[in-house]
Image (cartoon, rainbow, N blue to C red; front, side, top):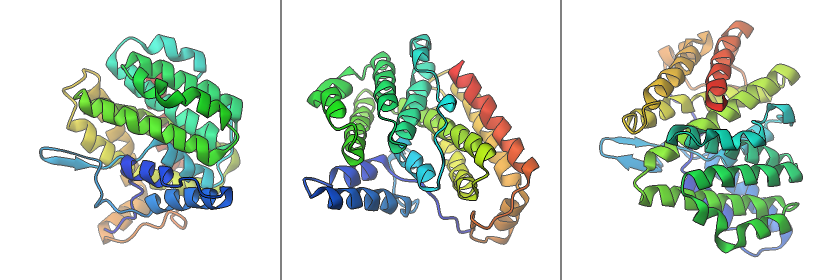
Amino acid sequence: MTVKLLIVPFFALALALVSCGDNPEEQKNQELIDGLDSTAAMSDTNHIAQDDEVTYNLPSALQIAYVFKKSGATFIPSLLNKKDNSSKYNTSNYKRAVNFGIYSADLAYCLFNKKYQESKEYLKSCKEMGSYLGLNQAFESDNMAQRFDKNITIEDSVVKIVSNVQLKTDIMFEQNKQKHITVVAFAGAWTESMYIASEVYAKDKNKKVLASLLEQMLLSETIIKALKNHQSAETELPALVAEVTKINTQFNAIASVKTAIEKDEEMDFNTMTVTDGELKSITELIKTLRAGMVE
């Protein structure tokens, strides 16, 4: 089966964003979009990490948020995880990491919807969660907060700032031999993005949002692969693997998906038929997984 995967190495995304340089504003904006679009077109031959026998790809919260924004997903503030919840997650590495990912997804959602005050507040939540994970240096270097405030209304500038921070956090986890934290954080970001998109679709019935939602379901298999490679690192990871596996199983059980797999056909999510019952079975699992992460 041929599948157009939306799986992007974060380093490639960061470089695409940072490479905008000091060009005129119009050119910078176009290069930003081109960079994001080009990452969406990359195949699974690109890899972010390789651990002995397992190689896997993970995109960033920014890239997923951009995909959903491009599909026309509207902004519903009530879907975001509450900012003042951050302090209650300082109980385990798993809770810290998964909610770091969730707040990263919320920040990206705010950024691409030009919600400036909310973006500042969710950056603060990311910074607080990051401090619990030993990431103070990533958030405090290069006058990040001041530059973020100064450029808050310039989308490409703040996206580059946030992408640089995320790049630094990835490097720090690598140096500290905590690659599993990156994987757990992405699982949180993916879950939050899928939760937001499914709720937005339920409200607006935007078929482009549904197509993007189904396309992002493909990432569940990669998440499972990456988590399994690290599941002994935290006691909560086997349960997380089981929950994401349920979502992946339900996705593969969609009649049109199952047919495409059996016939080894390319999946076109813009034309693929999905019943309300099939979609509900998946979205309910996403809600349950997300609720457990943020409780």
